[in-house]
Image (cartoon, rainbow, N blue to C red):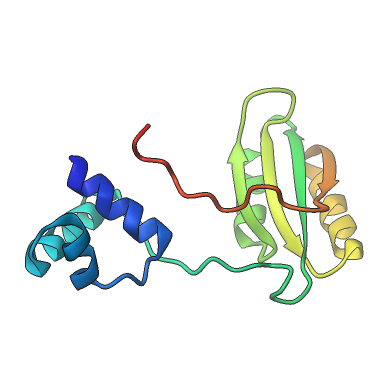
Length: 145
């Protein structure tokens, strides 16, 4: 990736609906050249999709929670199937440390958070942290690092 590719990614991270014409103007390329670069970034798997950022509080009063799970031996496949099929799971990461998995979820009530935590217990020791406020949310990747 060169400087222009990084600029294009930065523009799209700020607003994925930015037109190719506008991107081209900002990076000093023709529209066809900018479109070709975007296509190559997609083909290489650097840009993997375009989404809308949604404020989950305003979208229906959802409550965010983080769950940690220390998986029991031999439970990873079953756990992966379970969290992959759960509509309330927004992210799940395999991590180092005391827990082996961290899950971010969004739920319409604390009762459903508790029920989800109870379901997770079958996979291993589980902890729950309910989010009061998000200090930093959905920050874009700083590709100039």
